[in-house]
Each structure stands twice: as structure tokens, then as C-alpha cells.
Image: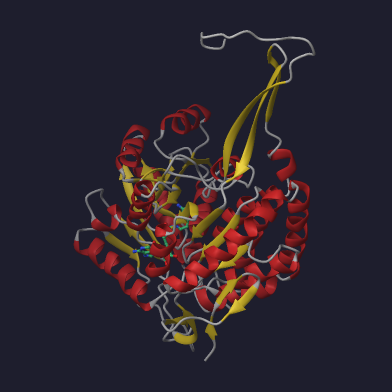
Length: 496
Ligand code: NAD
């Protein structure tokens, strides 16, 4: 069986002794092994990045951007192969995987603007014969640690911008679906990136700890679950590293009585069940405002959900695929059980779904729970599965109090025809990304992505303008070239 290695200094290298199974979640079978990097392998990757840094830092931004232009084309040319790798190891249906890659390509396109973005700020004549400017210098070696649910897109949130800003990168993708990130790194090399500028190490917690402890690593971008995000952020702070750590989510969609109910139902189905609900922006709670909206919503969802089709990744007619592991499948079932035992009504039950010829796949069918309350365990936790829960409230204020009281604050949306309500909601809600009649308000690449509360630890969001600030250090230079003949005397007061 093939063992997936690492990509260090422009080459695929064989792995270390420890390995882990990689599953095809659609069949439940082990299809590959992945190497789990030891401290030595991590050190090699960091050393390669460190050695590549001086020349890459000195490379003009336009030349760095040209690599990104070629990389973008290669991603488009190989989109089906990447989608296949994602499908094999994650279980995403090809249409969904291609959507993910396209959103990743957007970030490469934004990175192509590096010469414009890195121009800096200039002020002439801030004093007699004095000019002053700020420039944005790269940090050196930076690392990214990414989750299983977007094996191509989330790494692409990070390294294109880090690299065009002049840094060298070490990526540690999820050990559950590592192949796409490794394949894409080789495309970047093929696009003309010098060896060592981009490195990928596969591994688990041991590799992450080594990256954190390595003094040569200047900054960490992390995306994953909240407990790990919080721990990595705290550890980075103690070690004096810059860190942005994006965590989990519980995204609410509020449905007002005046909403276009057909649109709301369609939007909720896609946003709750797409990718099996394994998206950090998935809608997992629908908050129905008033009895009439609740009834319309439940009957619309019940009807539309009859045609939901779950199955293996390689059948494009499926709406969504399996969950990532058997363990996670059991965890999601456990949340449905607990909601039921705490008094929720199971309107549609996906626990016992059977997928023909794929009986060992990690499937759960679309599940709808009604009369869910804020005290329930299934409401408090991030389920990360194809489960939509309905909470009933009487008015918009109650809906907003519910959302604001939740520990997570990644995304939310409001379905309404009332502009005043929409404006009030988007202005006051304690959530980082807001949609109005838009169920998945994932910002485009030239804005930044980040939640509030326990969905983001750190001051700067991912990608877009914030990523330029994250991956660079401001240096401000004040320079005097006295006109000939002008001489300064000694001055003990503060320069003004
Ligand atoms: P995870 O936290 O288990 O793993 C994320 C990464 O951290 C992986 O590379 C993993 O190897 C590493 N890791 C795991 N445990 C670790 C530990 N104890 N110490 C150090 N490193 C560790 O997350 P996951 O299950 O791969 O991904 C799903 C989670 O990611 C969900 O909570 C989801 O909401 C979140 N997510 C958030 C965003 C966002 O933008 N906020 C985007 C995608 C996913």
C-alpha cells in the first residue's frame, strides 16, 4: 500500500517510521498510509525554508507574482485530478470539491496583486529634507496547520499570500486527507517556485508541537477545531510567535415571517447538508420567528428533504457524501440521540441511512430536528454533520439574543424582505460574517475571513487584506538628505 511522504526542498521524500491509515470514507476502506513526521523531518522542512528565504525575500514582487499566475493556470488544468483526490480521502462529491478548489484559486488570483498590495506608504517632506515611508517586509519562515474539511481551499487561504509577500512556508495539512495538499504543492513547484520556498510535512500533534517549538518559525496560521485553536494560540503567545487561529462554529439562520419561504428552504438545504454539514460556515440551526414561519419552514424542509441523495463521492448525482471517519459518524449519531432524549422532535432521521453497495461507508442521511432548545447538548456543540436543528422564537430580538449568547460567532444569516430588520441585524449581531438572504456568507478573496468569539483567536482574519498584514512586518524609515551646505546644531529636545 502506498505511503504518502512529505514535500521538502522541492522533492517528495519518504516518510518516517510512524504512519496512519487514510480511509476512503465512501467505502470505509483503508486506501493509503500517511507518514507522520518526526521532529527530524519537521526540522528538515524548516531548514529548507530558512535556507530559501534570503533569495526569495530578494526576489522582486512582480517575479513572485508571476509564479502565482502560472500556478493559477496549473490549478485550473488539474482541477479534476485534485477533485478526485479530495473525493477519495474526504468523500466530497466532485461538484462540491470543484467549488472548493475554485474558491482556493480566487486566493491565488488575489496573491497575483502582490506588487500593488506591497507598495507601502510614502510621505515626502515630513520635515526639512526628510522623507518617511513604511514598507511591509516578510517575516521569514511561517507555518500553516489546516483541517480535514477543506483539504485544498484552506491551505490556499494561507500560502499563496504568505509566499508572494516574500516568506517561505511549511504546511502541515490534515493527516486524514493529505493527498490534495501534497499534489498542489508540486504544482506550485512546477510553476517555477524555487525549492524550499514551499514545503509540506504530513503529521499529527507531534509535528505541530515541533513547528511551535522551533524558534525559526516566525508565525503560525491555524484553522481547525476550537479547543486546538485556543491551545495553539496560547502556546504561540508564550513562545513569542505571531498567531491567527480560526476555530469551530455554530451558524444560525434566522427566518422571519416575511421571508420568501421557498428561497429560504432551498438555501437552508444547501447550506445545512452540502458537504455533509462538514463546513465551518454550514448552517446548523434555523431560528424560526413566529409559529407561522416555523410551520412553513418545517413543512417546506420536510418535503424538499425527501429527495436528498447521499452516496459515494464518484457519483455526481449525489448531493453530499459520507462523513470523514467512522468515529465522527458515531459522534454525529450521538448528538441526534441526545437531542431526541432531551425532548427534540426528530422530523427526518438520517441515522440508519443505507447506501447501496457502500454499506461500510461513513454515511448519515440528512436529519431535521424540531423544537430544539438552547440548553440541549446538540445545540451547544458543533455537530459538524448533516443535521439541521430548528429553534422556535417569538421575535427578532429573541433570535439575536440566542445567537449572541452562543459561544461561537463565525457566520450567520437572516432571511427577510424587511430592509430595516436586515440593517439592524447586520449592525448589531455578535458574529463575524453576516449574510442577508445569503446562507453561506463566505467573503470573496479580496475581503478577509474570520469569526468572532470562540471562532477566531488572534487579531487578524484569514486571507484578503488581513493576510498581508499577518504575513508581513511593518518597517518605517525616516531619511534625511540635507541640502548641500545646511548644517544642524545639537538639539536636545524631542524632534517635532
Ligand atoms: P482539528 O482541530 O482536529 O485538526 C486541525 C489540525 O490540527 C489538523 O492538521 C490536525 O492534525 C491538528 N491537530 C489536531 N489535534 C491537535 C492537537 N491536539 N495539537 C496540535 N495539533 C492538532 O480539526 P478538524 O477536525 O481537522 O477540522 C474540523 C474543525 O475545523 C471544525 O471545528 C471546523 O469548524 C473547523 N474549521 C474552521 C474553519 C474556520 O475558518 N473557522 C474552517 C474550516 C474548519
